[in-house]
Image (cartoon, rainbow, N blue to C red; front, side, top):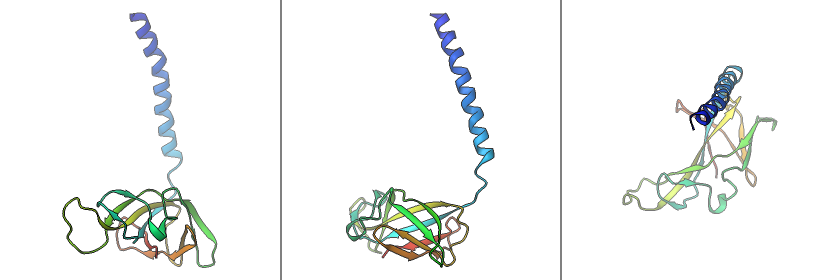
Length: 149
């Protein structure tokens, strides 16, 4: 039994060491490209509990996780593309509802876009023709916000 254990440990150690070496190489070679976070607000008014995962509802069904989006400059040239993440239900109205109660919400997605350092004059395009300007954000963690309407 002891021989098998030693043999198993001897087989696992090189795999673990190779994994550790690979991850440090990846972090040093890449990651230097900057990225920006764009907050996408979908005011669909769907009834949800605050904090629940969400996607756009009703007229905004095409705004969902894994939907493709592009960011275009003022001339319509694509500067970035990606897929939307899952959203989170946030309060839509300044009304007090009972704790845990479903209420009208908006779905909010935070999209990290590689290489995006400015949103001046740029548009966010997603779904069935939703194309809206990206507004600069005053929030330090965000580069811009998009209100899908």
